[in-house]
Length: 77
Image (cartoon, rainbow, N blue to C red; front, top):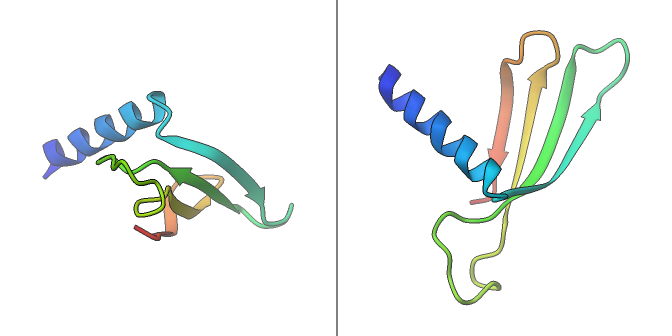
């Protein structure tokens, strides 16, 4: 299980460096709140010739500013 998570993290880093992840937005909820919201667009890993049939995925994450733990996340994929 640990090895599988390491592979997934490595793959996600490669997607980021290859610019599959773009239009990143960061929002601090408030100064008194220890959480933030991050939104971005992600190019699908399996490309298609028709962009309208397979548009970029919209991803959002709510996470702790202190620990980095993800509390909630979603993708329209």
